[in-house]
Image (cartoon, rainbow, N blue to C red; front, top):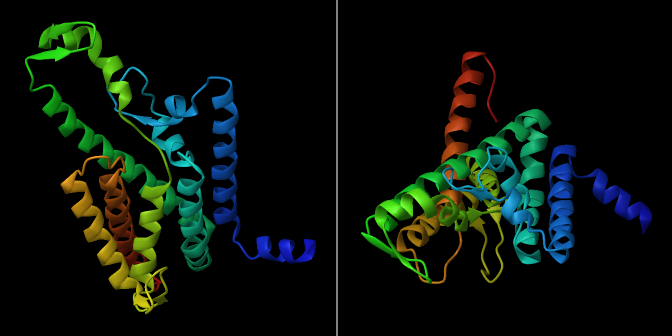
Length: 242
């Protein structure tokens, strides 16, 4: 059994394997710290850039935290299924760059989405803070930075959606078998359908939906741009982009 486990781990390329390990370790760390009253989500999760709890490191650290085991499992399963193929094709360096750029792109898009949401909040003339009602000027000067701390996002989903996009672009006709769907779907159609679904859910802003759909789209958008840049560079250098 040990030999089988060793062979399984050795079949996963190093960057993909280490990303999975880091995400798993930080998930366990978040559970341990939670028992002591410390929230890693508040420290390492991505905040709005004008919030009092924001720091630039969160643009990276947020993508290694997950809300629960299900959130972690599905992101890491997708990373394992599609990321190892991309790493084997691109090599570890290019794959890691792609992963980080799509994760950062997702964060950038999420910050823009939050900006529009907050502008809508600030369109009011007064604000009910529970114990008191304050006018707009007082709210902005005294309470806004702490109020903005409620805007937090975590998870590797932005980078994972970038990986799905890359797999669909590099292997458009690969057959994917999805749960509850009895027939295979070509990767290109799966990626297009997933992108449309995320756009619909993001624009719809349905009640009770706390998923950062636009961040997912941000990962796909930045992934698409980066692949196009690499493809042009490789073509100009006489290489075949795969």
